[in-house]
Image 1 (cartoon, one colour):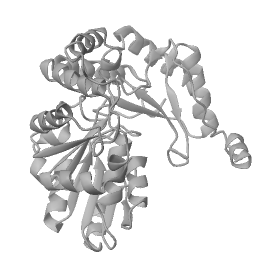
Image 2 (cartoon, one colour):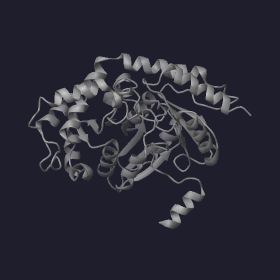
Image 3 (cartoon, rainbow, N blue to C red):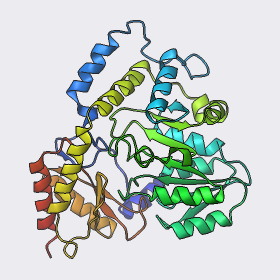
Image 4 (spheres, rainbow, N blue to C red):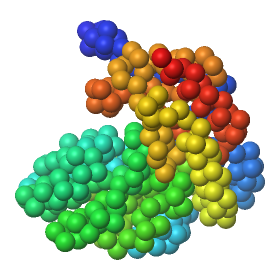
Length: 368
């Protein structure tokens, strides 16, 4: 262990836990500010008082003692919102993905995933007996060629908004390709949900073309947990074969209540999304020109500023943090060598002035 940690430290890749700080937040996934919402906190407190007999903890797994009418009603409500036949709640997005991909594909089946797919998807596939193929990021020709030469049932896994790049998958075309070859499309909506309404699958109205969706509550919703949306058959199958679901203590009641209230707030106030879009545009409009500093122009809340090399990107991040901006360096091996970047997340709680000041810092620190 010491040898491996020492090697990672020598390469500049050693990870360390950090405390909360008072810097301007440009790193969290709390895109709509729900996690820090005083209003939501008060709503949850008041609503919780209506359930004086609710337990603090779930007391066991859903199959043991942790299932309630409340959680099943919530699953039905969320499935209705997303116009899906059924849904099953999991303790996190990671658990949802590892559950789905570890038990669904069988031996001789094939899972084809975008090369930038979430680590949880990769880990889930590794736990299965299926064959895993990667296609080049957003390269639909490469995807189709791999579907054609795949064996068994074929599952295609993509993110609607990619967490490290902030760019979007071409879901319309991917859905068409999957439909034409009989492949089953699975979409992870973690970084799209809340930023693009209830997700890009809903926005594009391609629900019937998607075999399963993963909606994560720990990003824009500001809470914890996730739901897998799909058929009643899929829900029943996961209850019986998804080991992380079967053997994990269920979410506590207050978490479930918080999810319901956060959904209500999201649906009742579309202005959250409009405010976020305006602030994202403000950031992109004030960044240095591409010839001075290469950066993304994504429609999502995630923007990337590319700085090659772990030492360089880490130094840039530290410089920004000393000037009051919490911008984190994404280093290899989290991203491929040579594609290191600063990951900038825009939020509704970022003031216009803070966004402009951050852009000015990029102008200043990127000058030769």
